[in-house]
Length: 196
Image (tube, rainbow, N blue to C red; front, side, top):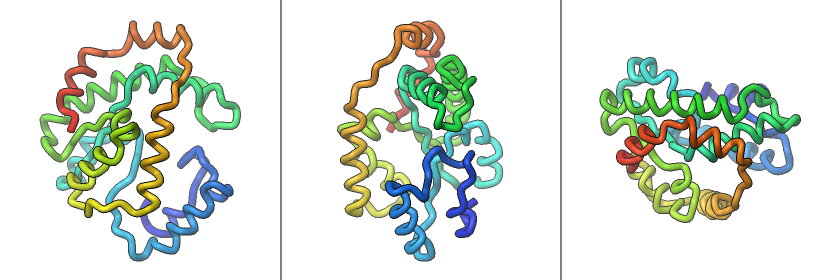
């Protein structure tokens, strides 16, 4: 997955963005120039929590950062993607599927936490990409034993994430009701106690 030829070759199921677009093209061109001298740290793979036993067995020293997002935002995001005809997101993956999967992920993370110890940490999405983004990102760099300085592009990204995180999103009453009735808030609160 992370060899150069594969890293810059995207199939439609790999991402919902177009890397040849005006917005992302320059980012990938810049990454291609720096790739040979870059240090590989990791990747954001949303469904990887389902494969934690495999990961633990094959890469016993690896570290996992689980990003925990509020259930209402997860449900709303999944529904928005399911409603978007230009997105390749499956239509069946609306808010109901989101909460079922969110609950499942919490159970997996809660069980894995004992086995992994400090090699599996939990961060809150809303803090990591909100007004505390730079502080939270510094904690992650320290956790990964990486230099604590930000490049200008990273500083720009974190500032933009703060602005986007502050944007209010309309959530339908139907989604709100489903989340309040079906999300496992007890387990959610329990996991929040272990957030770094």
